[in-house]
Figure (spheres, rainbow, N blue to C red):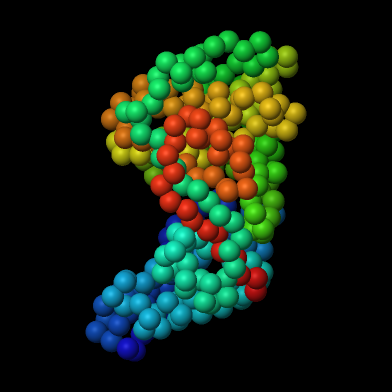
Length: 293
């Protein structure tokens, strides 16, 4: 089959990156596949690109995927990128395609879902609301309040040593502008960013946080984003406590939500244990694949 690759203009651009796009078409002009390449533009990640290639199942093994991949990798090289990452579900045709074209599995992720109708409310309430001598919980929606902004930005360092396998994600440098831009981007999509943070009673600084993004309709499933605790505050059950509070508040404020989704690196046993204890049920495994250019 003759396949034509057309470069497209993708209007999506954020403070963290921009995207390139391509469309694969058959001889009759019908779309058969697409590719998107996100070029990260923040300091610490300018070496990195993220790839998503999709080909209609009926059109696979007819060169569309290979041609889309070639176009995307050429653009990544032209832009000076040295690392391309892509994700695929374990055992899927996408995973087979990435391995066959030179990508290596660099990180395994376990995806899980918490059905909100089945949560143990008494246990969660005890965990979240039982007073702690050293920490208190605070929560907000959208952009972080001004009185917590500086200490919240500082707490983002808790993500720096998050287990990421051998993926070369670089160093994500957070400042107040980036924190606000991320929250604004979620709001622009019509979604709600809900954050719970643990505050150290001794000095008023944020020791850790967990983020949940809720569909604007308040239905379907919400998605956990980051959960992290600064190193000197670890081992005190804060991640479990913050997530319990987040679950309770999501259930109370958005009663039509069906569940909460999360994904955790397989080499992060602590967070996987937290999710297991809170009732999250594994749904599938995926891998982050990496190609060094």
